[in-house]
Length: 384
Image 1 (cartoon, rainbow, N blue to C red):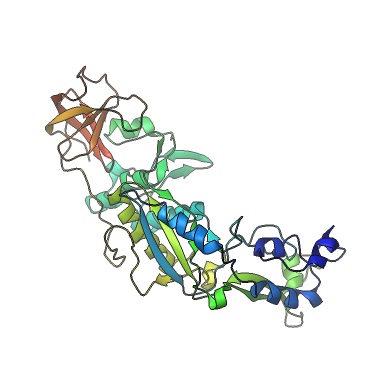
Image 2: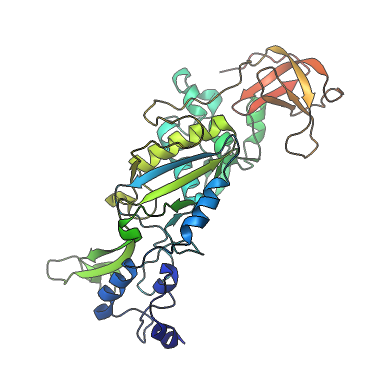
């Protein structure tokens, strides 16, 4: 069947050409003598003209107030999906329909989550937030999930929870007892797949062949049990990457304040860390496009210091006036809105029986980046 497909000629879809049309031998691998010419033919494949219309429709679909679109330019080669199975042991991820370069939203979300925890989190991640020194209290909001063995020991900080969500954790009761939000929750920001911008690559052919040379094959294979030495023949391995200079459009959805913050974090992470495989060798790095990055909302400056999202104005222990509103999630929960626009809820006690639309006075039990935890009793001063 594969010979019949190959007789038709190389398809316009890079994903199909990389997989179903690969000129494999009896061992299921592309022979070394055919690999260079085969990858050169793949790198010459241009993006289908119809992709531009699909791209514009996808771009126009982001019309909500909190949606943010921004373009970045590849400063180095990009290798996404190199762990996928392929005829040369190095895979690649492309758009399923159009065969264009794509960065999955899950990969971007994981990158930013790790970046936030590592760069902005506290120095001592083992300490719970209520035991952090005063100089580390603000950084505790950016701390990620704490693990013990394979179990989640403690949930994340307030900003991390708002951006990425949180799972249930063993220390949830202790967190609630100290006035912190705990338990499972979903993140406020949606990371969409990032797509290649049409006509931004050389001749609209965004792919290029690359070579990784293994110098100590016997040592890495472990087949001969030999130590590294100067007499092994190098073993060049060719594979496909996305060429530098290609533009990629990134898309975020969610509340405007949080998507603005996430855009700055994502740009910073892509510039400093990169995304995909071989980032330690400089792959996957991006730079800001010449004409600015944000095409919806205010322009973004990733060079600002510590991220600063909109935060609730009221403090723990303050008595405030709130108005009951419909649950925006549609789950029928009892929700109240404060004067600053942030929502509040009751965590461990029954809420007051107030009709929707009417106001009441209440105490603030806890403040997080997502809103308020409310109480009918005046809270005691939090112990640090």
